Image 1 (tube, one colour):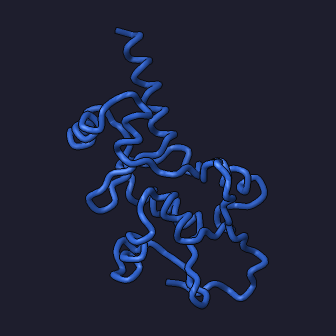
Image 2: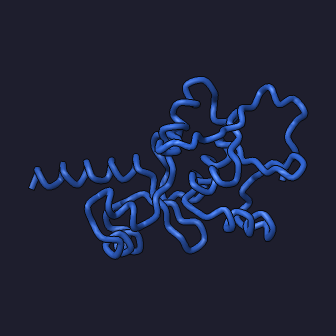
Length: 163
């Protein structure tokens, strides 16, 4: 846990709108004006970004699991977007290309829908490491970035056309 510096002018507090837009879309809008190391997310946004529950992040903070940095100011807790991205990179199965992308992670079921497969097939691919699908393993859970899933799908299409 770190305390935020007293100069809050260099940070922007990310407040998602109460519309039907996704967190990815709103983050892409704010990233046009600010760097990830300037954007602070509340626990709800951070949990959505990592595809975990708010309670899971609270347990990690209390029990000091996974060394996920957070900042506390009074009763409020914040996560820096750059710290979340570093956390994702640290738990990735392979070095991430396009590390600057700020995309919410997907769970196995959502990832399977994204690449038109089943969650069981994804589980086999992750354990067998045959297809080189990049995944983020945090504890016992596995998450995926949409960019990596799209790259994986494109590679699958290229190899099918060659055969």
